Each structure stands twice: as structure tokens, then as C-alpha cells.
Image (tube, rainbow, N blue to C red; front, side):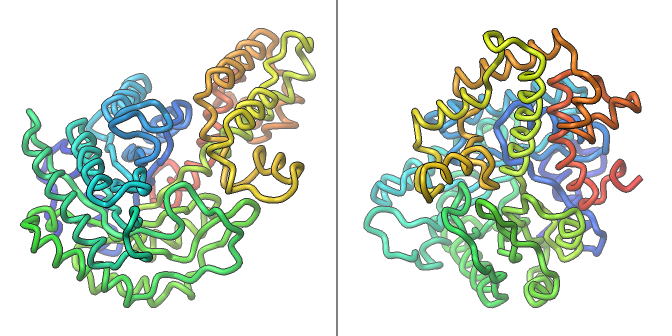
Length: 442
């Protein structure tokens, strides 16, 4: 299924494919997939790629970015422009930037009938491909209005193949045609994170993985999308990792051994792991060694962003007069209460338990509210205030000890924005280590 990339080629899909080939050959290397639309998170990831010599793989999910704007207000071309501008600003060559679309399918339109939902999904996929996205995760696992529940695997595959045909057509119509690579399969829970407390979690069975591959291969062939099938590079399966509001389910190699061994049955494929947020760096490295060559992370990055911002806001409270403070925590809470769409149904319990969850939950539903104008203004005011007052080193040590250490060593400026980005990079450094990047292993 895989072909080695052409020497000197700068096609992003070929660069990505090359790294995954190395994993299949037994090298402990992988790729971090950054699933976030926050500009500071994307900047942190781009800076990490510059320093460790790796790829910047950024994926937009179907609820973040769609042909209507998604919850971020960005269409696929807008998000692509954001990533490319960021890469250029930190001097990351664009031939090391890979754009992906995650969970592309009818997820956003599940309340509609399958015909209309799939028509919108086709337009979604075409918009992504036309905007230059090359890693396309086809996910039609969600039932639409009137569908049987759960959706039969054969029907899931048929719909995915339908979208693959649309993607190939859109790719061929580009002024500069590009090769696409596809990911099939899905995981539980659906995009957006777990809505329930997780008591136990079992890895995908080898039988289920075999069925997913067989159903999709047959559906692609039947749909006349055999060329697209040759570009399928990864299968999403559940390795037994997840997180809920207060708990992380850690990867256990022994529990996933049967599944990881089954990769030998799928020539050219690697596994893709979703919801790897909050795993230890050792667990992440074990996943890569066990053929989960693509590690997706999203809420864990914005959780770190929120940690850093809250730490800086605590410093601001000590240094700035009350009338001049950003009141970032208050602004974020007000935005979440004004529009509870993105957290209601996720955070249960009494009002006080919900308040704590809104601020500190691993599921990090607050990530949906950073684009809110009042919240964004509060962040800018926080940065401006601290840049004016300066940040005393003892206080930086109290709230951001790792950043304090780097400032003391002269590796990092004691500026609010830079400190936040570096704290997000602490998460990415663990992923770089797990994926065998140079900086992390030095």
C-alpha cells in the first residue's frame, strides 16, 4: 500500500507517509497530530517542530472547522491560512507542514436524515481538500436521523467510500494536484470527548479491526475508489486509553498486545490513537513502539494553555490594581454560563461541582470559549498588564516552575505570551520524545 517518497519531494503526504513506513519497519518513530484551533497552541506546535526537526501535523475537526465556519468561525481555507502564517512566522518550512481533517463525515448533521447529512459531508470533504488538506480521516460511524443504531459496519464503510470518491475528485481538480492519504475507522467516544465517567476501557478486538479493514476495502472497491484505498495509511483503533473529567485511563501494553500484534495482518497500515491526552511520556513511547504511529492530542494542549493563563492571572492579582486587572477567570466563567452549549450535558453534579469542572476538568470544555471576544480581550489585557509590570522571579517559580527554570537558564524570556507557549510545549516535548524526535532524545 505504501510507496517510498520520491527523493527530494516536498509533497506533505509523502513526507508523512515516509515516517509511517519507518514505524512499520520497526523503528520507534511516530508523528504527533495536533488537534487544536487555538493560535497559541498552533504556534507552540510550530516552534516545537522547528526545534526538533519534525513535521507539524495539525488537524481540524469537523466541529471546529467546516464549510459554514464551525464553532471557531473558520472555514477550511481560513484554518489552513492560520497554520501557514504561523509556520512562516517561526521560520518552519511549509514542506514540513501537513494539514489534516479529523472525523470528516456527517457528525455535525446527525439530526438530519442520512441523504442530506451525507450531501453536507461531501461538501465538507471537498472544501478541506480544495484548501490543501492532505490527511483525511473518513468517519461515517455516527447514525443520522432515521438510521439504525448502532450503524452497521458495512453502511459506515459505504459512506466512507462515497466521501473518498469526492476527495479524490476534488484533489484532481486542484491547480496543483496533490496526493491524499486516508485514515479509516473511529473510536469511542464520538468527537468532542467522553460525556460520562469511565470505569473501564477495553482495547479494540483484533476481530473488530479486521472487520473494519475488510468492510472498507470492499466498499472502496465497489464504489470505484480503489485508487483511494491504496492511499489508506492508518486505522483508528482503541488501544485502551481515554480520559474523563477527573481520571486518565493509562495505556497498558499487556492488555493491548493482541491488538498491537494484529498490525502484521494489515500490510502498509499503522494504527492511529485518539484521546492520548494526559498519557505519561513512557506510555506515549510504548504506544509508538506498539504501532500506534500517529498520536492525536487536543484537549491536553488547551488544558496546559489554561493552566498557564490561570497561573499568570494569579500573579496579576498580586501585582495589578483590582480595577485594572484582566479578570480572566471571571470572563471565562461568564462566557461559559452565557452559552452553556459546549459544556452542558458533559458536566454533571451540583452547581459547585459544575463550576469546578468548567475550570479544571480534563475534558477541558473551556477550550470552546477562548475565541469569545470578551475572553480573548481578557487574555490580551493579562499579557499587556504583566508585560508592563514585569513578572517577579519568585512568583514565576510559584506558578510556572518549569518556565522559571528556563528563564533562569536564559532559554526563555520572562514575557507572558512566551511563558504560555512554552508551558504548552511541555506537553509537546513528551510527544516529541515518544515519537523519536531529535531534541527530545538528545
